[in-house]
Length: 270
Image (tube, rainbow, N blue to C red; front, side):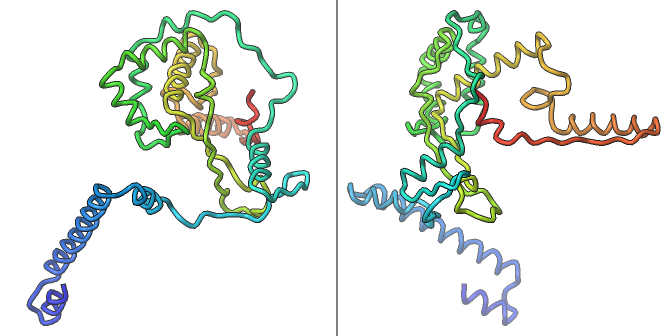
């Protein structure tokens, strides 16, 4: 590389040649690093395997000495902080909104097809994080290729019985700080990323699609609802709003928009 730069200065090599050699050098370095890493993994001992795991983990984890709740309570130990963030992120349902599960199931499960389940398995990114079982979507897709009927039976039986197994409700929470908060010593300055098991997500997606299709067919949703509906987007919502504003202007009226943000809406859904 030094010879190429020297030749460039002396006018013996063009700028294009220098860029090409620089690109080749970077590619050779990447290939060398990849080859060394593969050799290390293929010949690693038991202790070196855990050493490789430490190499792949990101460093610089953020910690706080203590956290404060809304009422002023201070948590210092790891257990106290975890409990405080849990209460902040997942509040208990409000009184009077608890609902009991129906004793008898309906007939919706009969309308679920093998194609619906296949779409739920493959309609998503394989890069989605897994839950505590570490079973990622890529592994589930491989299982589908080998034994798709096993997944189909699990999903259909879960929908038929109306049961979402408790093991699928176990999740791993990753606490991350909210950006641009003035005080990171309070629990509300953090949010929890909930990592659920991917096979449970398949059942949830099949059920959600079935419910959405039934609501659309029976016209149960308000015409002004755009969220979580197929063939409706934020662009459609803005377009409808602009149309109403322009109609108001055409009548000589003044148009106003009221925007509302329901705080903690998702965690409070029972």
